[in-house]
Length: 374
Ligand code: GLU
Image (tube, rainbow, N blue to C red; front, side):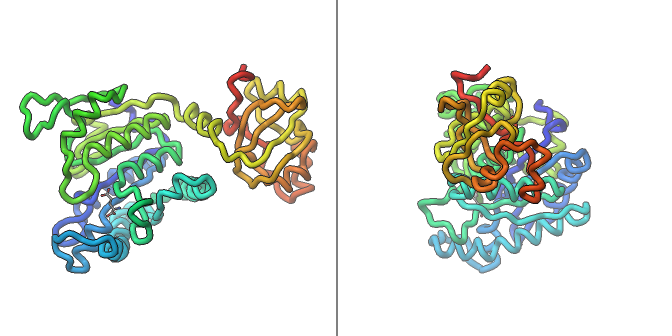
């Protein structure tokens, strides 16, 4: 089984059927699950929860019964249910001395670069403060065309955003099967999947395709696993309806692990290399160009010129003096500040700016171009 206890960042997606009981939030399940999360926190692991349930809880709160809801009704339910959902999470986590933080995001936050950076910074800060971010889609304001609609893919995008090593999708089935186990007695459980082949997708698409309370069936779980896989993140699909589903995974209970295709670091560098919206460039001297090839950070001393306009955190192109692209990286200063400190030794930065964010581009945030990579 995957080494859950060694992952430094974990995302767990909790579906509506788990949190929303018949008469409100399922406090018993949440209490046991909170104890499960507290164990991870006690080991120093960072955990983020993607929780559905706002519409299901809101529907009950507003007395909507079981009838089909229009979009504005769903949005109203989400608004009324989201606060109930957060109260349930707060009450479950509090006895363990854990703070929850509500984060409502929309598809744009995961697709538009500046918003992505913003959400990334907030989530990273919350995680490093030891808080448990409880993320949901901002169903109240998003329109049909631009919503995820299912939290499986949203959770995978969030896992990618924070560089999680493991994404746990708590489901109403204990993993992937070769056919629907409820109708086919020959269906075999798949404990480990390294390639999401079209055959696997087809098999899984049929199994559990229609889910009761939430919106995501097995098909969206496979889509989520595919996103996670290319982000260097393993996906674990297992049964959520047990008191401590994470402990169950660690104890080797039935689950399917979909292995990552690359490392988190390689995926991050590929993401930087592929960032199209690079808004500026820095020209570096020969010594710095050589140092970058050996895996070093770009220090301010090696920067000869700053071109274009960019903000702190933007992807910029790194050029050598002949104008050839050496790589792309996330810059730690905006273009005005970069201009003021270019050529300076690192210990001279603070005297000019009043702060020092370190190198112009840290080696971890730099993707060397293929043709120049050592
Ligand atoms: N965001 C929706 C909610 O909280 C749920 C989406 C899903 O079921 O995946 O109600």
